[in-house]
Length: 447
Image 1 (cartoon, rainbow, N blue to C red):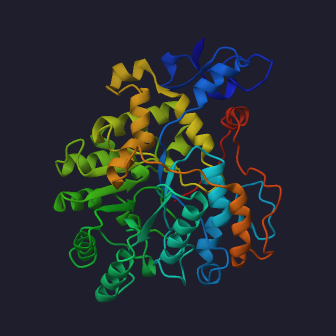
Image 2: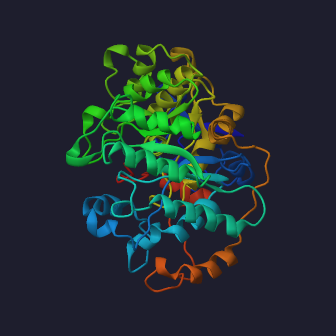
């Protein structure tokens, strides 16, 4: 029998009953985790947390530890250092965020099917980028080599930084990258720039030429980081309004609002147009301002947003409920910001068990999180966005070949060899996940 309870108190393997008040009745919380009454019921626990969905993670990261970015932009290195998994035992902690760790954490230690790899705030060139475009392509090729025949498991997203380059240089870079045939999307950090000066994506001098070039090159997916302010951001340009405005100007292209505008500092509640300057409300306000209907060419993404809110079920219910209602259930995309802090598997399992309460469905008009809706969010929506065949064969990765390939990629590792045996750097089992949800952690990715 399944019950609607606090996920952290169930399926934990403990013989002790939950402490009084450790789970909230549905009438006092907007979101709940559906788990078995009996924590020893392994079959029911598996049904609650396991799945066979197509999972396309449109927001993932890794770094190139030996790149010059560590010396050239120490502020970026300082921001990434807290995202190293606690269990990392490498002499150089950034080896736990490198290409090998990425493959293991994303594909061998999680149910992720396909991942779109992204960069952090930078100009996108080797001197300041933790994973320049060329290295993203190398990761794509590396993973393909580990899987043999079948569709690729990694897709590439290139940074466009029009405020860092002269226009001709920017357009040439975009053309050269698109010519490789690997660019699935371009991504912008509009609040990041020289001298902490941001820009709007619909700025006719800075932003629009880049969008016009992407359109000419046939790259029809543009993503932009919005919300989750990073140190050094020009907060004036971190609002999603410019993305929605650009989407209206380019109806044949698709625009993805990374993080859905979510901010840790803003408590999410039901949408209130009078209080819509920050958080996911800012995205909804922008949609209203520009007259964009649900199911338009504006998409929203859950990277870090879900991980931050899943320990507060009421806030998670408001975020998901608002986005599904206003953006459309076919415009919400799964993203995790993996491999920051390790494998994204805990986020996957928690989402499988999560439900928006019936009370909130009635009070606010939020939809139920049905298996069909979750399947859309997990991967079917992204397959539509990125032009992927949901039924295509995507081969599993050969872990032994990964270990062999380590020798080919010795330049990524100062000791030249993988640490064996490999230890998971995140809670991966059902019991670990359910225990972890008691305190998912305070230092989470801003990207």
